[in-house]
Image 1 (cartoon, one colour):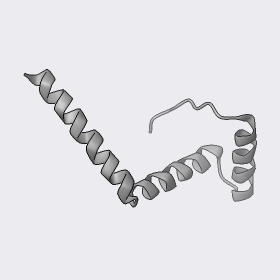
Image 2 (cartoon, helix red, strand yellow; image 1 turned 30 degrees about the vertical axis):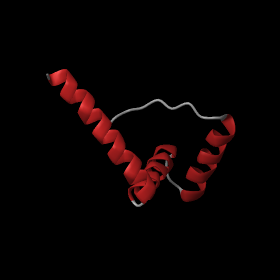
Image 3 (spheres, helix red, strand yellow; image 1 turned 90 degrees about the horizontal axis):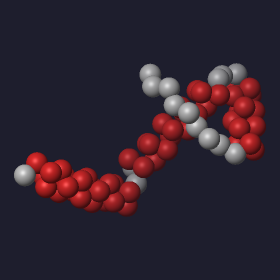
Image 4 (cartoon, helix red, strand yellow; image 1 turned 180 degrees about the vertical axis):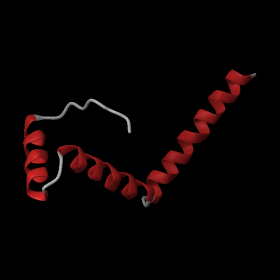
Length: 68
């Protein structure tokens, strides 16, 4: 597991803490769950997938240029 530092607004921190307390879990678990939900949502989003594919192609082109 990777450790990360995150800057959030005070009201977001209070809300996350309240969620963790209400769900009887850790703040880290609340954040991990939110990240998992966001990733799942993006994976199901056809417009996002199209943008992602374009970004992959652009990066592939750049890497190919460096490999020459």
